Image (cartoon, rainbow, N blue to C red):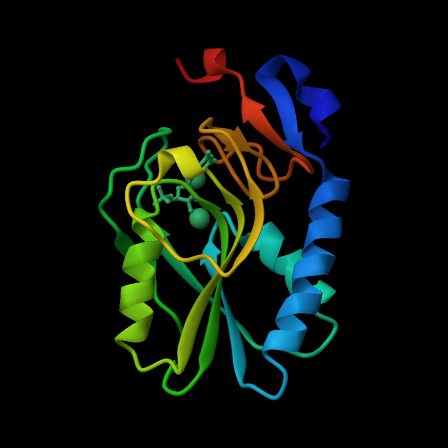
Length: 183
Ligand code: 5GP
Ligand code: MG
Ligand code: MG
């Protein structure tokens, strides 16, 4: 599915598939350097980070363990509830591990600030964040993000893992959902 197929449902493409892949290669090189000789664990936050994790972990070009956590702070709407609920916990013990959280997007920052605190309390040696996207204007709490793909305007975006009511996750680009689709 490409943006061209759903032109009436989006207002514009913000980040293309090619731009995403270039950026992932750049960040993977940086991460490979920073974590050389360290026991790195990638933790993807379901479901939005599935595409980022798939492409980023393969851009790393070495064997790295992955785990997944599912939390919810969004319903099917477009606004953050601020309440974080664990839907699926990690399978791994974090004690002494260097954890890199892989996220699709930082919006209010509420989910990640909760996750950072939660992971640190489990005895991880370090916890850092890689987020593909961030909306600086939407921040409600400050979250330190060591590896960032793109800063985007404060609009509801879909594609490359990001959904609206479970649709559009398989769109290859990242696009702004047309307001008539949810109002
Ligand atoms: P938070 O507001 O806590 O930073 O964001 C929580 C989660 O809401 C994100 O990880 C992401 O899954 C979802 N989210 C935030 N902004 C958007 C957006 O613009 N589009 C979509 N599809 N999901 C978003
Ligand atoms: Mg997410
Ligand atoms: Mg969602």
